[in-house]
Picture 1: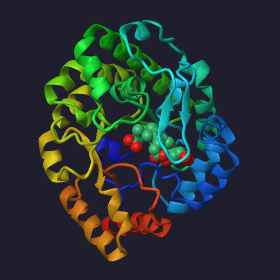
Picture 2: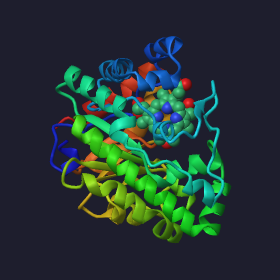
Picture 3: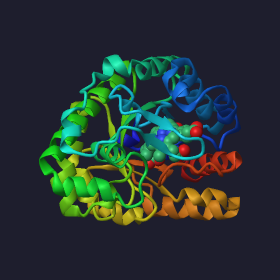
Length: 335
Ligand code: CP3
């Protein structure tokens, strides 16, 4: 929490995106009993998975176990996750008419299971900040329009360029839902939140400003001054200043940018999260240590650094390496 406020901390805090996931045997064991969506929608199980990862890794924050696509369930778009594959959206948004037909949901009602899970974790981990999260409007829209994951976002960008009015309506609706969803999580006890705009790096800076920035800003605005917010994206070297303008007390960056350069572009008024390449955790520990030192040197002990991977931890990661990483960050930054 100090790092979010850019205050000096006794050591650099660290957590890992997707820290509860398939690389962890405890998670795989729970997944044998429940499907992924069953896991997300059962507060006791989601809370257990959240807490287990924190205890196993010794990280400085918990992140509530959920998924950015959960709002698509009450929107009735036919969300499912294929074994081994990615998410699938049965009724994708293909036209302006499809946008008009979308249901505007009330997260406090239809996603209340996330609030329940947050309350359980809050009780079980009283001494650790708990991160709530949501997908940013662009990244959510990309799944809704593509019908799943995509390599080039061809359908999303085509929709954006050909149907700018419908795009604005869709993004406006998603910003409103996301803002309410994040407020619900804050009210339930989340200490900070992260907005995941994972795929926004697919856009030019001009397109980001025209088609995305107002909506990410609107999604984050209700939290401003309430709890700290982390604004994360990947491939965002061309978008850093614009993302900062959209909002966030902390800007999350991936490994494609030099942390020192990112910070000098963003200025002192913001904290930074990142940015070890998750692939580095597949290396031997000596190489992991060398790479952790590079990230820490770039952060230069400045208050306001939250150590993280540049993107989610890979399923192939040895748990021991993730634990070693957390220990290294604490040991190398202890002041
Ligand atoms: O960080 C955490 O530990 C909290 C849990 C969390 C999950 N998804 C669990 C999950 C978080 C924060 C997310 C966010 C999320 N979900 C993002 C943004 C982060 C990112 O990676 O860019 C995105 C794009 C999604 C959508 C999503 N969910 C995809 C593309 C997939 C399939 C790919 C994959 O990794 O399997 C999922 C499924 C998913 N979400 C899993 C987990 C643990 C794996 C599902 C399983 O157990 O089979």
